[in-house]
Image 1 (cartoon, rainbow, N blue to C red):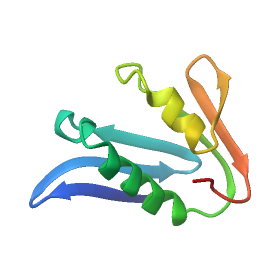
Image 2: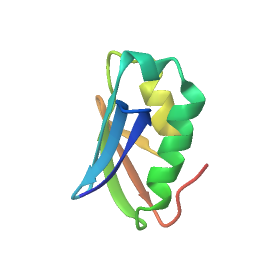
Image 3: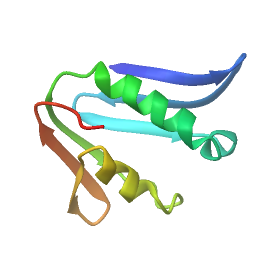
Image 4: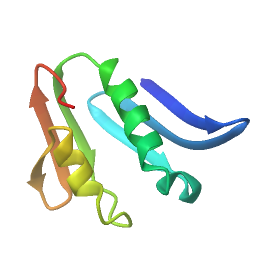
Length: 91
């Protein structure tokens, strides 16, 4: 498993991790309003992953989650499941 945590002092605001080829994330309400911090953490996280195929499920409670995944090269595979297939991460 690979992952990072977004913190504010001793408080964990969110995490993103990859287990096998599934990307999982948990974002606190406090972090949801800090979009630049989310994007910075995401870029740092994906820069550490080897090229390959990865899957993610969009968070239905966050209206823009599908758009966020699309921005980073994920494509809608079925309903709420997104897939990334590639050699190099965009953006």
